[in-house]
Structures are given as structure tokens and as C-alpha cells.
Image (cartoon, rainbow, N blue to C red; front, side, top):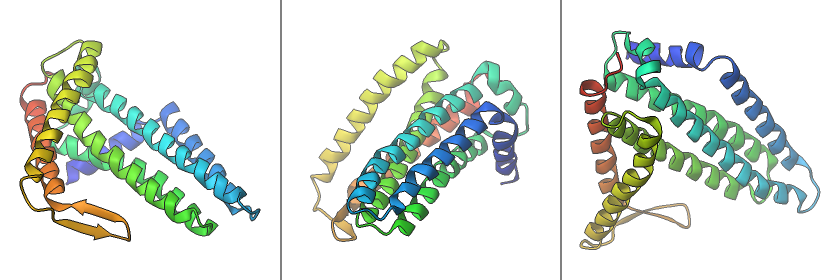
Length: 232
């Protein structure tokens, strides 16, 4: 746990310093300003702005996902990875720290949006909250899956752009195959679901199988990072 905290301190302190940190702060300020417009009590205007903010929040979360993936790729590369991996840390500690770092970054955006939406009190607020949480959840799962692919494929393919192309094509094919296989398996069993709210149903078996797949993918990526990547 101590090493994970050290990695987080390093990432938030030294690695993500300078222009990247400034851009993130500016983005949060812009998000705050756009969200504050929903406090205007003009009929339909605040609701219309809320609808626009759904797109804004999703865009911020997506941009942060892409930026975090680029940072992750650099940190496990032979050129950039040497600095952090000279520390006495294990691969799983690095991976867990990166997950926590991403959740903190996404969480700060969601928290600000959630508070501002709750204070606005217009009838679109619940829709915006649900969309924000769903997008944050989706981008977090995407981050875990894509970073796992990055580690696995980059341990075999050293050229950056070829590796990216392989991740897009190969990762997409693997994910599609696994997703279709899980759907096929779930159809063989009775539909058991958990209801959240008035209109959200979660397929329990489908969710469990996806969880098993993600855990397996993470374990494979940690093994590759530990044994095959020449980053020290």
C-alpha cells in the first residue's frame, strides 16, 4: 500500500506537473462555468443548458480517458518507464495505482458535476446525474480494458504506431468475441436481474461473467508487465 501511495504522489506531483496539470485545472474551471448556467431561472433555458452539459461532461470524461491512456503508454515505455520502474515497486502496485489515479481524475469531474446539478434543481437534473455516472463508469471500465491491452500487446510489438493499430484491431476483435461468447452463455440460463431505480435492470450473470473476464485480463497484463516488458 505504501508503494501505491508513492506512485500516486509521483504521478500527481512530478509526472503530471506543468502544462498537463494546468490544462486539467482549466478544464475543471470551464466545466464549473458551464454548469453554473443551469442556475438561471428562465423557463426551459436551464433545462436546455443541462442537456448541453450532458455532452460537455461526456466530452471532458472522454478527453481525460484519452489523455490518461497516452500517459499510461508513456510510463510503461522503455524511454519513460525507466524513471518510475527504478523504484522498488511491483507491477501490480503500479497497475493498481494507475487505476486509482484515473478514478480520482474522473471522480473529481463527476463530483463537481453532481454537486452543481443537484443545486440547480431543474427537472433535467436526474437525467444528467444518471448520464454522468454511467459515462464515468463506462470510461473507467474502458480504461482498465485498454490499459491491459496496451501492456499485453506492447510486450510483443515495440513500434508505437503498429502497437496502437494492433490494439485497435486485435483488441476490438478479442473484445467482440468475448462479448458475444458471454451473451451466448447468458442465453443458456434463466434471466436473473437486479433492479436499480425505476427503469435500470442489471443482468447478474452477464455482469459476473464480464467481471471475471476483466479480472483475467488484468492478471494477464500484470504478468506481462512483470516478466516481459523491458522497461528498466
